Length: 268
View (cartoon, rainbow, N blue to C red):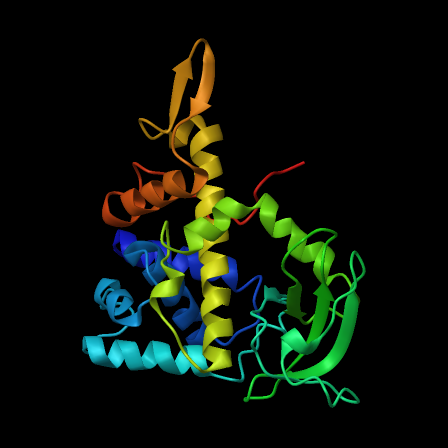
């Protein structure tokens, strides 16, 4: 009979294999990264390796770290081919190469027009010449110019980036308030893309659990929802509620704590 950790790992793998076309071995590594990030609440591989059970690897902690490093650095796994899109705001001092724009050496050399965006495609960013697209915009009366690098085909980057202010709590959960993304660094762009890819999946999973805790009567954690003047009020954030629920399932009897293996936030 498999234990709770093995059961959860297997169920999560079966859910993800329907969504992400990866080999079984790579899918195992992806699941291990996701569970490790959730349990350790960090992206530091040494701390993730400490939390991973022997069912992932019977080797030493050092061998687990190396295995995760190889997975994150594997160029054959490309989040963009999985239709992963991104919009990232960059600092103005980054080096940039734009065909036909020889005077532009850094992003700050691009003069933005007030309330009108500029779009550049197939540029080379930083000394590593990372290929991407660039959108530049400065809002009316704003002090700072936005330099947004992205892989969108059309000039929707500014519009898409504005959405981040509607999900500000998510960025807190990614950083010091949750997965501590800023506690690691790498000059390997593939490593960073894969790490962010893993965090995004882990976050979606935890949020669905948090929603389940608030709506499903069978998934009630004491303190998540309280009655206040006859109305139900959520005390924990969806992230905190989902995280607590997952850990209870992972470390306790899963039969007592129903775990929803689904990435659907709301069903119409």
